[in-house]
Amino acid sequence: MGKAIAIFNQKGGVGKTTTNINLAACLALKGKKILILDIDPQGNTTSGMGISKKGLDKTMYEVLINDGLEPIDAIIPTRIKNLDIIPASVQLAGAEIELVQLEGREKRLKKALDKIKSQYDYIFIDCPPSLGLLTINSLTAVDSVLIPIQCEFYALEGVSQLMSTIELVKKNMNTSLVIQGVILSMFDGRTNLSIQVVEEVKKYFKEKVYTTVIPRNVRLAEAPSYGMPITEYDPKSKGAEAYFEFAEEFLELEGEN
Ligand code: ADP
Ligand code: MG
Image (cartoon, rainbow, N blue to C red; front, side, top):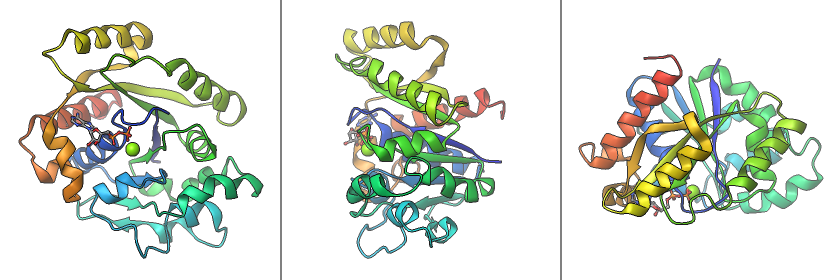
């Protein structure tokens, strides 16, 4: 049975999408069967995988809103072997409001995901930078949460809100929800600040913090505009190396290496 993981931090620009695409691509290269769900109306995972958001008629939006659609029919393969996606479309922005009046509004993604989970080793959900119903649906549907934290001055700001959201979902909708791990991103070893942030985050999240740290690397920032994961765009870059290492550590902690 596949494991579903939400990549979540309500702060924008912390590396959720970059981690989603590149961890997924590295795991797929290692032979794991991976599905990524783009539930962020910005659709950055979708475009970052080189998929145009225009003209798609079976997307995350339809999966959430349309009871008649079988989620398996919304899955499309990417150019990467072992890596499938359910893309986002612009309509997803409206789903936040439309969901409010639907039956079982917090559990609609879980219902869909439960039908396709068994076909994959890991399913990653790229969450939007908000605490609305799309995020609640994601946290309700998954086994665990992967939290990217950017190495910047306000790194821990908002973390208590993030934790109380997870606790809230755990208490009311998903009692078995756990933290998969915390991945530090955009690390710059030349600055004391980055080093201090790592220490602070470790003090807060303790052994939940991965040993691998993702460095700031311009190739990681360039790759999405070519619609490629870093494994395709520049597999020898520092960014690719870091995500390969992260994938190894991830699997090791899952007892898979
Ligand atoms: P989020 O999904 O949390 O909003 P993104 O993954 O989109 O964050 O990252 C925010 C911006 O920073 C994007 O432009 C992305 O390309 C860039 N970025 C992310 N990680 C790195 C990194 N390790 N090095 C350099 N740029 C990065
Ligand atoms: Mg994003």
